[in-house]
Length: 581
Image (cartoon, rainbow, N blue to C red; front, side, top):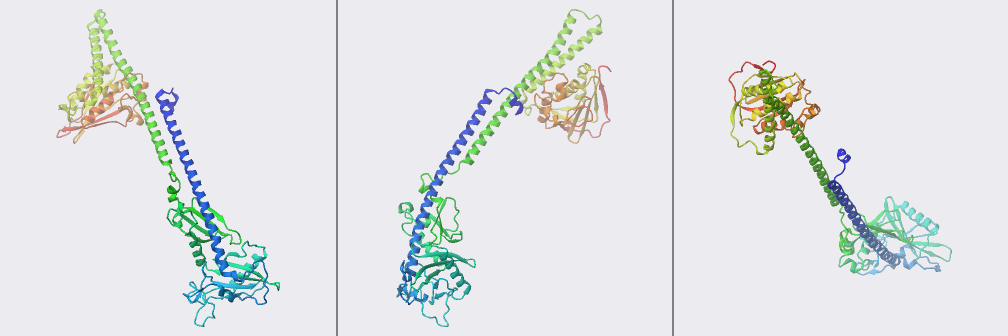
């Protein structure tokens, strides 16, 4: 990529990056639009939640005030003083509750049944109690003295510490100057880890005393009052609920001033778009938290909550980036192929020009009769023959490379003696090796036979030996070894050149690619010789690779053998050298 950016960018590449940038900008803008729409929808849901919290708070104040007035209204004189010397006892207060003939007991109509009534003089430490003697205190109230066998279901009567806690708590709040706008006060405290709800009113007397009358409610009883408010008519508009219960549309949670929960209409709620409002201190500073259920956003808000398109946008952007990378790679590949084609044409032109120049030179010399001896004439003809063979070899390679997609599967094959073919090819290449004073030696350890298309083994050997002679040093010895093992024929060609590094051993078999040593040697080359070798070998079910060697390049060709001799032959050595000849 760095090499690509260092070059002058082409117009397709510029347009590609421009389209990728436009896609990224469009994705960002689309994401911003969705976020804006979602923020607006969430704001609307929070506004609905704020209204629901406010409306529930108003109904809660109404319900609680009605329940407390019904329970304590008989002993509340408003702003007037109590003038009668007879002060009502706490046990007399429950008699003011409505009488219910069904249970033959007192039962409030506007709120839950109190757990106990109490009264004490401000500054005193004696707490008067009215205990519910009904056999089922959750369904009615009786104040007759209980029989010995009838248990009184209250803790306030028996726990002196809790009675002290009640008097101390209410005395501290009154002396702190707490005022009420409805003549009553509610206190939500905590006793031994459990919430305690107290409601009280004051009765100033002409004697200068202040009597405090109050009631206590159990947490389940007060929670039932809070739950009943949720389903009241008018908490939410009918057009908003659409014939559904309020608790199906919203979730309400009530807590005390410290956040301790007292009631929740749906304990499994995940709070996201909620709103909270607080009641006055005279109502216990209760906290009302409300939320419209997000599942109903589609009915409440036009279009509902917009879903996040970020995964889709990221996928789209990633796909565009991937396509951009593929396009850049294709451009790089196309550029590399163009460079390789140019190098191939240049290499082939060089390979053709050199032997043609040599042939023309020797023919011109022969035509002018400048050779005086027969030996000189013979040597000139050998040179012409050598350069002609080089041309033929190059043309065969180019033709083979141009037809390589056609394959050899349908071509008739014949059995070839590998040892004999190697010896014949090395004899033909003796003159080519003479140009660099090289020696080609052949060692046939075993004489395998292979089934091949006629001429293909010869083309393999010519390419391998031509590379060995061309890229090796002058006066080197090129060794060719023929061997076999059961079902396999092996040919090795070893030169004394610079060798092929491990990092290039696979690359040299690719079309138009040459190793660094070959490219820097100055010797011409088309870059298709080893490619043709591998394709021919693969078409015949064999393999070719660059093997490790302490010196020079070692190419190993393995082909399926169709016939093996019964016993190993003695190694056969033969040299092909123009000097020796």
